[in-house]
Length: 158
Image: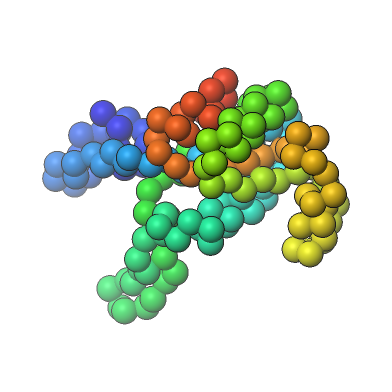
């Protein structure tokens, strides 16, 4: 059984109460990272990629949070984000399939590690044809089956 966090879980909440029912989403949010990135790069790339989905696909964002004291917090994704990894070739194939399926997609190229602002980031991507981008990560959102097909060959991030 898959939990709302995308993994098989225990049977309760730890306090003796039964676990809430598992939620299975019809859509999927996934990040695919190149397997040769340093840890800091993986984290940085993931953060940048999901920010694109959050702004470009407002339906993936839930309602704002508040604690018991009434302190307000920003909303977050309404569903889990899967993080996978793959080779440069797997990333290229996933990119091509996502474009072919016209799924919402954000990309991070190796050139973006040497830029320092949003304007330079966009210029670096704009300077390279889609099939020649040196992708180090991508994020994709869409129907579960379509995203699964896009990510064929990728494996769960350790």
